[in-house]
Length: 314
Image 1 (cartoon, rainbow, N blue to C red):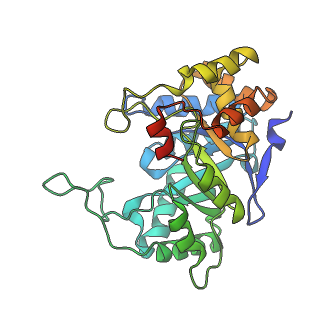
Image 2: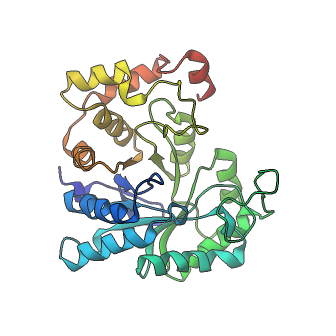
């Protein structure tokens, strides 16, 4: 199976590779490592790169792309690059300058996909997470429909080929879809999605509106204190997932990734471990790897978490 041919058509006519490389990294990862790991991901075959302004490494990711173009590994048109508009730039007059800043950092002429990162506007300024004296987040009053109109203008200006959203629920998507005078509807909605949080209802909604679901944290929620309960099970250690992987002589990660691809979800695999990066791309050559069995387990309602958690996310 040729990885380069495995793409999904977006509702604006462009194509997105079904497997992407996530470039977000923990703070302890150096900028130079972000550069080298991204170069390595391109070398082993990744052509879909997912990044964002808030990751604070677009300069290094752009350098990696340009390096691999310069040495003949890829052409610019071979790379599908996603960036995201951070929440402090939602005022319409700030949207295009924010994208232009990303392009300047990347030293690229355009991005392939530009997303609204979260459906929450924050106070404009230098701080990525503006807080008051009590440590409470300072929000901003911005109509996301006006932000979307500014993204539409970025597309018309050729700064991005496609536009979409991230972390939107179906009601927030409907607000954009039902906006009077809508010129372009979102091509995708990028959300956390994995076997513990399969987003089945949101996936059905997106499919019904020709919107692609893109899965991040596809190998399980990030184990960050304050972000998740660290007492919850680790997805890649789940006995059902491990049993399927063992039966089909694959890794649990490959089963979890293939599960998403087989249900029509574009999936991002994030790792700064070179062995795992090389391993993850094998999902395109690994066949079904028992994902049908995994689907059946999910469909029957058997809980990978306790039942309370499972019902919460259904």
